Image 1 (tube, helix red, strand yellow):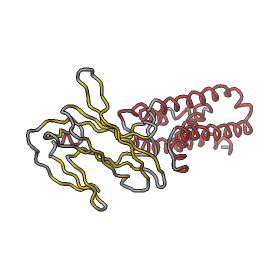
Image 2 (tube, one colour; image 1 turned 60 degrees about the vertical axis):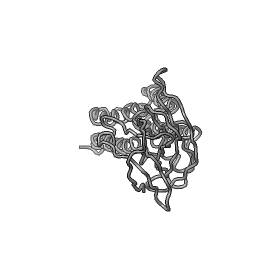
Image 3 (cartoon, one colour; image 1 turned 45 degrees about the vertical axis):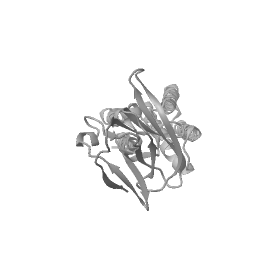
Image 4 (cartoon, helix red, strand yellow; image 1 turned 30 degrees about the horizontal axis):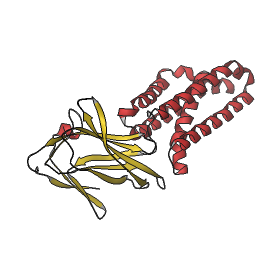
Length: 295
């Protein structure tokens, strides 16, 4: 077998292996950061690319298919990496990530032209059209809140009767919950509160070292009459990255009315990091609670 024929045989397999590794890594990073409530479509897209990379392996020998897969991988990598390097997240950082990905990809296309102008020419418009579609889709994902807020990730969240910062730990008082409510399988936590008793939402958000941004706790109650969630209070505060377990903080809601509640953990550009749903029930007397340590 001639060396050139040997390369043609093995390069598609190498391409499939490399892209498969990238999709696997992206799925881990993006799903860790994603709240499936908002980001299920993008996570599903990553899963589709991961599965499709295996099913359509024969297409890796086709220029357009393999090149557009590479562009989507480059764009996804830039969205994750640029905030880590710049220590900032937000609209400008995302747009800069896209610009870097497109610039790098155009350089790659110029390399393809230099290596094989005759083969590239028939596929030129397909490549440019596919590139435009992917770039537009990524921007739609971002500005509609579907794209996970990388590199932030929710590491812990819980609703408690009270939370107190003690030294390097947080002490919380909580009431016993059924196991299926704790894991959110068939129900949601129920917090029984006496008249005038507050409740506290604790959350830890991971961010890379030296990254500084703002996080918002948005408390909402479901209005049965209108059928909509109504914002009850919004608390925003700065966080700094670097702690393995995430930046820890809690907010308090005084005199919560009985009903269905949720608290959204959001970035400063209003992307959803995480969400906790729970129910507040009225109790004539304070319920029995226990104290736990939140590390």
